Image (tube, one colour):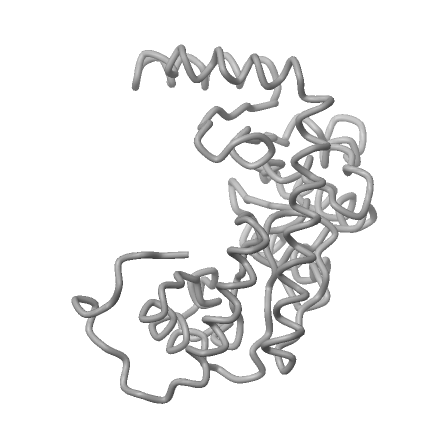
Length: 261
């Protein structure tokens, strides 16, 4: 993946040479970049995976959180006839409805679903009943609850970007059309140091290296979620600016405050 999105040629080349049995994708409002995979790229990736016999696990957990665009079609809808049999689509209600609701779902060929369900029962005898009842309640009111959550997230995203523009104008980012976070470019490889210093100011953030397969990559990036209330986000950005300006040695964990924004 590049700053501009998915490198379809690299994906095709990797699948052709490595021939993996399984590949994992987040095409909708990708975490952490927030990018949305174009329809033509989806079709290319699906064709390439089908040619190589690679199963795709497509994570659609964030699909409903479309802030500026219509919610995208399922990725499997872009597959050629017959190729969709190699797509396993997964999702969760923890992002679209409530973070504490750890109820997920899976869409795949019926035989594979049956086999996976049997494995689930063998491991933990099934999911919590109360959680499933709560999930049913949310699903019955999804037409109202999801748009309300999207509207709140849009307001919070605007609060975060406004605060960044006011307090940290040297940072840059691409406005994500959906999802839950900004992928911020700090302009210098200081993400890890800033994340450590921010703890001293009561702010917990993740440096870009946490989302990289190779050490040292994305050290100039921060993922900043916009899930908190607008006032909390504005205060967090103010503290981040103060932490960035603080050039004292980073204190040990024992001397940091326990309150985290």
